[in-house]
Length: 257
Length: 344
Image (cartoon, rainbow over all chains, first blue to last red; front, side, top):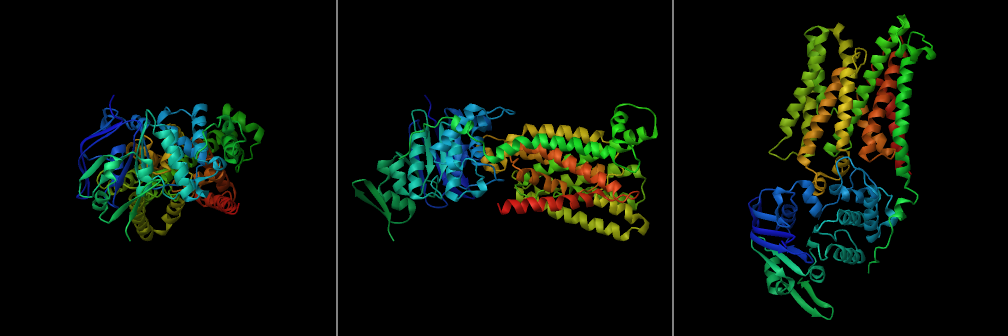
């Protein structure tokens, strides 16, 4: 059985800056990965390359053993979904219609969304507590509500691999917890896996069992979170002193002021 | 903690549908009715008094009477031309707004009408015979399309703001050229030129080509309707959902440009229809392009048929340029809807 996502000697750069050099990564079903690094190290760029939204890397990216560039955009979107960093309100479609667009890669060209698509979208809307907003236009939503709509759309896409770019943007603490819990419950299963960009090390530690750290100079570290959540490694990666305090609820990470 | 997801599909499927979806069900039938009504109206109104009851038999049969010739050779081709041009402009406007991701997108924003107008006015200035105007308009529109596309395409990535800016600047260039031609033209040619600039259906008596293009354009655009829904959320999001965005943009660009060129060639630069009709449909609840595209086509066609009927009868035997009337009818309607929406 091949990994859900595998990279072999993957090198990505933007504007003469190395994002990663020779990255070897294997993400298996059931794993939840955090992608960590300073601002501007290219986390979003790497995520876009892994999602097939950008070309021009060296090395290979394999989705369930198939070279990414050999898949049509539609096939790719049936297999891997991405939550983008920045939200868009579009031209004011309703919440339900927007979540339904998550079904797009599964529908034929002229097909309309059927009962099963509507059922899936309704479940995703319910899972993110958006029932009361289903008929509302995106133009009338708050930033946090819009973020939850986008997460619901990603859930409706039902992909085996979910790539999330700062999923907790705009969310209050309570919604951060419930949304991450939902994502964990639905997207990290026997068949599915998640790779998410997060900035909060505490969330990264509690939610993700694997970490991928970009150091900003092309070097990287990947693997089980425990050896990687060492304060000295993190201090090096973020270029700022970070301490790790053990508590009853697990370790807490603090950046020194 | 999150509750388990026990909700049944019926809770949304069979509940009261939101206001918007109930209205959108009515959008197509209502616009279809309006289109039928506007065409019938255009056939019954005019300087010659033809009883409405007779009109239908004149359309179908041929009894060789004057009235029959008026219907078959004057009113019907002109009404169908007006419908085709209005439909082409509204459809092209809807596509442009998605392509540019800008609600101010309209068919003329890429300088297509400017290119056509500059070419036709130059032909008029050179006193070329009238049959040159149509090929001149088509050539000018095509030239402008290729110019904007070539200039906006930096590398393999062209962004919508770059396209919009290029289009606006090229249009400004055409506008200067038009002013130049107008200022050096002899006075007796000015009325004809001004009519052409404001949009005029007086010479549009061959509806075949624009109607065919409208049918093909609507069919092709409809194939992409769901892609268009997603493209309004941004091209990156569209790519994330498995749409080949480069191909989509190319298709949209050339489809919209071709339809605009056909409309401009048939009737000159008729403003307002392409910008406002898609917004009107959206305001009425048709944000889904599977509804919006056909509904906008019908509404754009109907508006232009009604406006043209008014243009040729209001101060008959003189005729008004129809572009003036589309604005006079459309501006208050659109402002009213915009205002009502804002304060609801």
